[in-house]
Amino acid sequence: MSLRQPAPRSTIDPDAADVVAAQQDRAAFAVLYRRYLDRVYGYAYQQLGDHHDAEDATERTFLDAMRGIERYRDGGAGFRPWLFRIAHNTVSNLHRSRGRRRTIALHDGFDQVDPTLGPQGLVLRAEELRRVRRALDELPRDRRQVVLLRFGDGLSSREIGAVLERSEGAVRVLLHRALRDLAARLGPGV
Amino acid sequence: MSQAEQLDRAIDDVLAGTRPIADAELRPLLAVAATLRDALAPQPVASRFEARLGARLREPGSRGRLVATGAMGSAAIGLAGVTAYAVWRVAHR
Image (cartoon, rainbow over all chains, first blue to last red; front, side, top):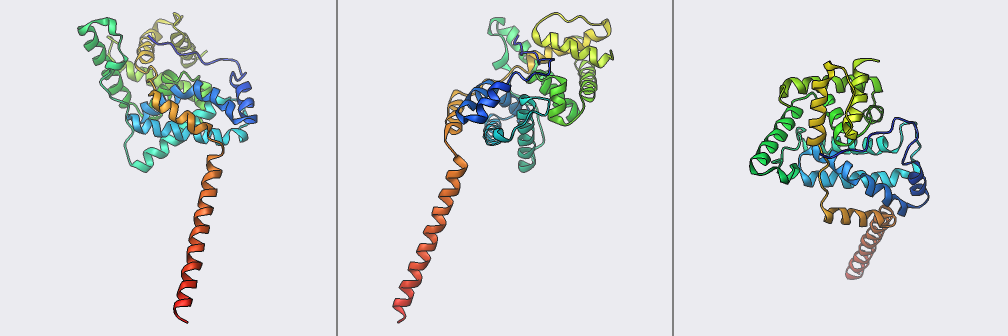
């Protein structure tokens, strides 16, 4: 089980000091890069379903973020939604330019299972992961986006609202509907 | 508090690995939430990619350098054009 750092409920941006440092000295951007590389890459990978495309999107996101960091002003949501908004736009542009239908990454799932499970356990777990990913892929786009940002990247509903330009309440409703939808698709044996 | 808000708060607990306190109605949804947390665990980034992008980000003013390279290229094309014209003029005198 991997745990995500829960999104802070307070309005103080935990990245604020590092953002100011990066605005004054670009070398300091490395701290933000290291902190968010995995999450941005993970988001891109889940959206694009291909490691090379995910690397491309991640590279564009961080290069754009570094170029834009001097102009960044916290509008209340914080740095993290700002960065994910760039990632979201980059992924959307890649989808458009490549004319590719969005897809959830459907790899074999074996790289995410606990190796201590044993051969039979490994196969069952990988199959469960595939089932979850298929169910996610069948969700309407807005619900799927919210699920990926909430569970894959650990963003709060408020932060997701800032990324997708929706209210916090609207994001919560989407999340609620998405989980109800997934519970129905996956059945009681989740 | 609405059900959507209750669920959202309980998801914070699921993501943090603590036991959420929620109505019986929400429990099946929280089971899905726990499954999603595991299924959507971050993918590992290739170390070669991490190093390459890190190096690109450390390059000072990569956009400025592109502009300078473009300007030098244009100047070279201009110079070649002037030289070609001069050669043509000499040849046709």
